[in-house]
Length: 368
View 1: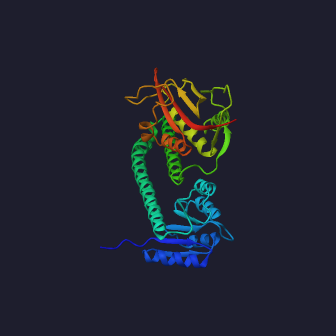
View 2: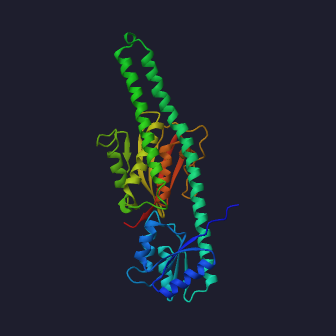
């Protein structure tokens, strides 16, 4: 039976004697060790080889422990590395500062070897649990994507192939210009739908690289977000769609978001409603809702094709139906739900009378 490989610990300490003592102690417990004299040297080593845990002094020349911690937590390739601080200064303020940046443990000098080993083992255990949870989430995502692809891609692909086969097997002399134009339009519709699905799939794959939240947040007016998206629809040619009414806000509401991602999510909510809308004359209403502390970007239509057994409509913020079943069978809604969750919000679905549906992208609000 193969033995479990020894964990590697990077010791970042400018005191040579203490560094040698830590190396000797940890090696006696079976760990593999690496050493660096300050934060900058540690970063250079991390670019070459990643340890399993970092044990780091706080006060060092060139780059101190806090700066090293910030650098690591801001790097997507390093941010999950467990870091344990060693310091002679253990004030409440120092510990609070380290915890705010994302420290795993904080030990005061002089160090008891047993306390250090216990801290390392706890950090390793936490990291294993995080990695396992990420892998479990990725497996669930892969299964969901496979289900989405099977459901979503089959319909437009069958559509395109069916009309293409009809065209190839027909005698051109028996097809009128109107029939040829209709077949071409149907193939074009199927092709556009496939293009939308591929773009949504690629965006959903991109979103999985975000470990906890979007990268480029900025405060923006929620109503302006809707307005810009509706003017930017592929079918609008820069003009506001006649079938859409954007209700004016009574009071300005701001959200702190990555505009690109939220815009993509709103595009997909609109596309979902447009595909489900049964009557071209049915009005699509967009609005900005507010339920402390969330701002909701909502889109509603009263004449849509509903699933066979939609859940009962509910009215209050806490018990609203989340977009579960719908998002599991629609790639666009899966994108919107993921964007909402990355921002600390959620996507909800409300069903009402007269075949109405309301989709709301709830996002944490910020002060105007």
